[in-house]
Structures are given as structure tokens and as C-alpha cells.
Image (tube, rainbow over all chains, first blue to last red; front, side):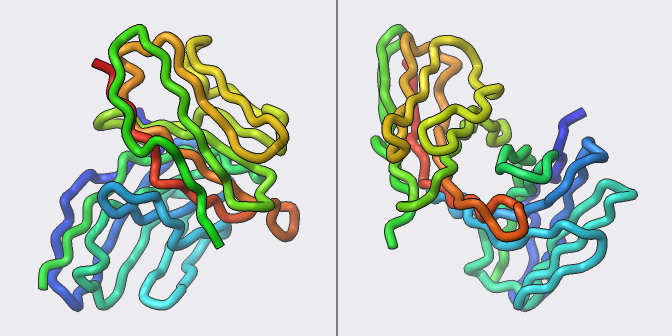
Length: 112
Length: 117
């Protein structure tokens, strides 16, 4: 079993729709959770982080964490073609440091 | 402000040769990390420097890999001798210490793509 699992996609959504990206993790003691966006050939860019159960909203992005189910998700509202990228879920098993465990990423395609 | 820069962006070498990758972190970031993504796999942690000291090198695959960060500024990652399975994208990232004891946001470079033939 992989430590962090994501559906590789591609996930295709029409412009203006909600894109829902999901991630599960195996280490129940994991402390913090991150979503990175990566355009082809570019650096991973942090778009959301969440530490506590529940929802966290930032603009069009909402991260959701359920530690009991070991599940974290990212919702993108009003999806735009510029949101088309690979979305990487990353988990930090420790409270300090940035020794992140990454999923393989989900490719998102927003069709105009 | 300049981001994390890595050099070279792409290197093609033959099996058995040596390659040195360089990373310049964001100025003032004490924490520097190396990660690697091999084809079709996840990005995986290699090691972590705090200033010039190796804090955690548990992800280094074997002794053919040597990372240094002299003076606590830029870092190099040397692969000697390179093997076919070393091909992939090597990412460098840096961060400051964050508020409340947590580590700050991790900023990635664009990576150095290594191809070993």
C-alpha cells in the first residue's frame, strides 16, 4: 500500500465547474497536509495546507481533512483553464520539518 | 526576491560518469531539502540540511550520492558513479522556520532533470 494515494486522472471538468481532488494516507499519526500545484516542467507550488479536521477555505480553494478516515481533499470552485495542472497531495508525518511524503499526483484538465 | 534556483536544468550523462547538481535556496532560508522524482513515481525525500548541517539524510538511496552545503548557503548533490536508475528529476526546496514552532512553507525549485544513458 502506498503511503499517500491519489487517483492519477486525468480528471476533466468544464470551465466554471467544481473540481474535486482526493487523497488518502496511511500514517494515522500524520500531522500536516498540503496540496501543491505543478505545471508541466515547473516547480511544485503550495496552494493549500491544513492541520486540523474540517474545512479550510482560501479564495476558490477549499481543503478538507478527515483524520479519522485518513482522507484529505481539495475542492476548486469556478474552475478555470489555468487551473489545468498536476495536483500533488503531500503529508508530513511529523509536526516539525518538511520531510513530506507525496502522492503521485492527479492531472486536472479544465475544458473551456 | 529570487526563488530557489537549480543548475543545470537538464543533464545527460553516461552510466559510470559523475554529475553534480547545484541548488541556491531563497536567501535567509536555513532549511534546504533535496527531493527526487523518478519516472512514474512519487516525489521522494532525500535529505534535509539546517544551515550547513545534515539534519536528516534517511532518504539518500546509497553511498553514490553525496550532498554538501558548505557555509550554509548553496548546496550540491553529487552522483558518482551514476547508474541508469538514477535518472529522474531532482528537486531542491527551502524554507524558513515558521511561527508557533511549525516549519514554514516549502518553496521548490524547478528541478534538475538527470538522464543517465
